Image 1 (tube, one colour):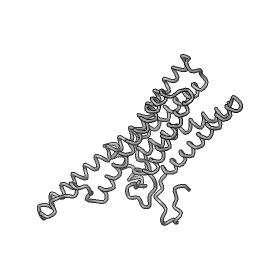
Image 2 (cartoon, helix red, strand yellow):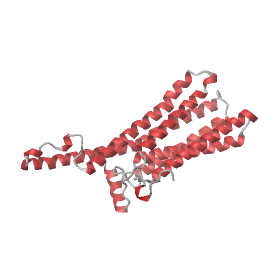
Image 3 (cartoon, helix red, strand yellow):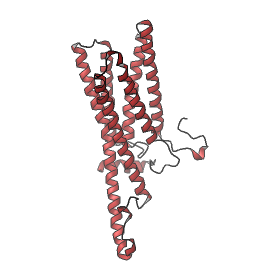
Image 4 (cartoon, helix red, strand yellow):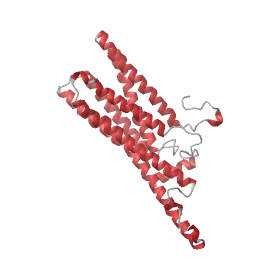
Amino acid sequence: PIWTSPRGVSSRPSVHAIHHLMTLLLGLKTVTVFFEAWRYHSIRIHGHAEFLSAVYLCMSFIKGIFMFTVILLIGSGWSLVKPVLGDREKKMVWLVLVLQVIDNIAVAVLSQETEGEKLYEDWSALLHFVDILCCCAVLVPIVWQVNSLEKVVEAEAESSDTTDGANGDKNESNAITDVESENPTTAEAGRTLQKLKTFQRFYILVVAYIYFTRIVVYLFATMLGYRQTWLRYFVTELGTLVFYSVVGFLFRPMDDNPYFEAKGTESEAVEIEFSSTVL
């Protein structure tokens, strides 16, 4: 397997279910790009590629749904921070799936219509609208996760302040608390703080990817001539490659990683889900 370590079982990195989904997404992306290139090659040689076009649209459909689902699962902390999804995360997954079905129907219709016709313009507007909704939907679980971790960090800081204040009456030399410094006072506080920083980086990364592929690339394409239109797709794929690489590195499996520990018992899962709902 791609995520396992060659040094032996004792030194294998902590691999979660989300890591295998990320690997599968990378494989789907590779296969989709391969069929797209084969399709254009066939059109160039034979002038048509109906079968390859159908295969490419199917692969693009599966890849699109899978990409947004994986981003949503990572943002919600599934398998990294908690073993199960809460009710609201499940609703967001279903919402993204429905939006992606509509999005890919629009793509299929656009591939059969002529640019400039009213039907083409209507489906194009629907495609962009649904795509924006999908981008906003995948950001919501990340915001929920960041807010939950921020409240946990604040609660731990207040608890530490109270404890250190009581200890200060007994020993004045310990009056300066570690909460006021950069290093957390406990290992648990350090893990929570690291989780918070990781998901904050992931949020910024997703926002940057959406802004780049939906706005920057569009503005860049308006400045290109007819023979340079391929640069639009090249820049988009380059941005996607950078996004995949950074996310893979950010959430890579690590040997005995203390920052991502999803508890596996049902009672702990219910407790996590309940606390997430309360927050």
